[in-house]
Length: 118
Length: 276
Image 1 (cartoon, each protein chain N blue to C red):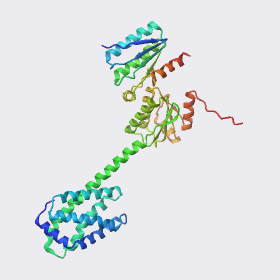
Image 2: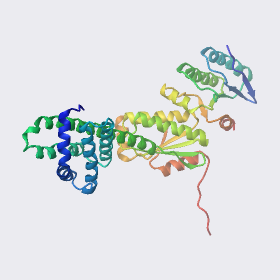
Image 3: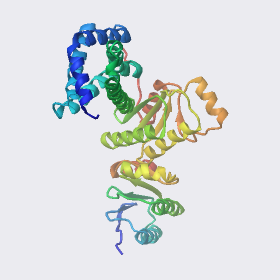
Image 4: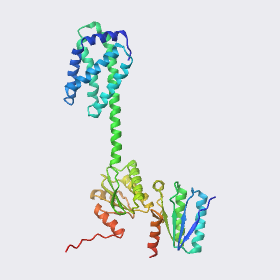
């Protein structure tokens, strides 16, 4: 199983998903992220899905769950770099990812989080 | 189209009386089209057709049948484009029967030949009808495609603010196209505000609202804030009486209000220049 690395940038955790998402790797990411959030007291999580071309309802739900878990640690989740096709798929599946903020790219995502810190 | 000796006789007879038959045929057709094509044009068209019909009936060459069909198909397709009714188009072919009949009526010895000739013309008439319908359907399909393309522009209002003026009924196919174009533009321009202007949407029912919400949700996934504007008073009443909820989506009366909202949201301010 491939693992997704979690990078710490200041008080933000940066996750860039560069692999084809399998259910178990998403589960693993969720666990790793929870551990990392508890350990680092980060205030923001950026999940970059620029390279992700396919999502299903399970992955959509897991992303929402990651958002909810982060909020328990008082961290905000921003999902960045979603492809138009993925966005259309998610809305067709009826998933609007409540509780997760979105931004067009990583730069705008960082800006969103820094705006919150102010 | 069967070619037998009786048709050969008929062909010879028709060739002998060509001027008379074509003249009468033209009269009948010109009366039918009521001045939408000139008599000279029709005469050339029909003379060509008549020559081909004779060639087919004489059975001299194999290509004539194919050529006749091609010419007829072309004729009925052009009539379909010019707004002739199918009746008028088919009549152009069928009136050849009348023209010939008026001639044959006196000489009773040509009856079997006339019948076989008549069958052939019926066949050709049906062919014109078929091509007419096909041409019309192609026109409709082309127009629908053109309309879909034309009716979904995405325009840039400001740096980071784009607008989608929606005109016409929103069905699933339209929504899909609008959403795709909107998202592509969001990615291409890096905009973070999108204004959906529904001034041109005639009615907003639950289905249309559902489509709008889908578009807004998809745009939100790309981190863009959506504003719906152009809600007319009647539309507002329908929305409320149907119990449609737009949730936390900003809705404004006019495009100007929406632009002002987006500018404020983006931290921009429009001020008057002090000219004094």
